[in-house]
Length: 195
Image (cartoon, rainbow, N blue to C red; front, top):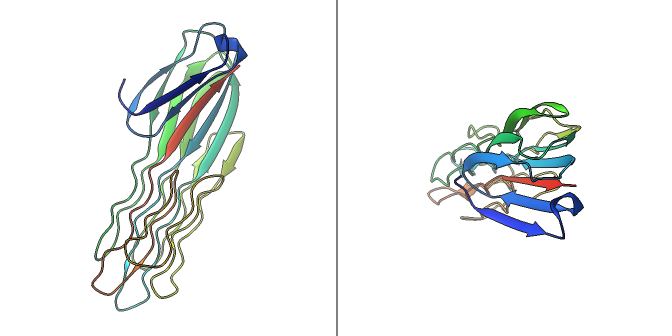
C-alpha cells in the first residue's frame, strides 16, 4: 500500500480507529470488529494562472464528500488521493480527484471528490458525488491575479500574490502577475473513521 498514512487508535478498532491518507493510492482494509465507516474525501486544488493579458484566475478548489456506511472487518476498498495542480508562469495544472470504490456490507461505495479546474479564463471548483454529503468546490477568482478557491471544510485558497500555494486539503493556488509563477494547488485527502 502506497501513500502517506497517519493512523490514530483509541482502544479497540470498534471503539474508534481513524486512518488519513494525504497522497498516493492503495487498498484500505476495514479493521476487525468495525461495524460502520465514515469516509471523508477532499479533492485537490488547481494551480493558479498568470494575469496576461487578462487578470489571472486563482485555481479552483477540490470538492468535499462524506459517506457513512455499514462495514465488516476484512472488507476492502480502493482509494486514490488527488494530486494538487502544478504552479506555472502561464496556466497552472488542474487538481486530481480523490476517490474511493468497493463493495462493503452496507452496499457499493463509489465516491469522488473532484479536483479544481483551471483554464486561464475560468477556474471552477471540483464536482462532488457518491456521498451522503456532496459539496462542490469553490471557484478561483480573477481580480488582478485572483485568489484560489477555498475547499469546503478543508484548506484555504492561495492569496493573489506570487507563488501563494493553496492550503491542504484541497485549496486552489493563487494567480500571479505577468511573468511570475502562480501558486500550486494543495493535495487532496482521504480519511476513514471506523466505529
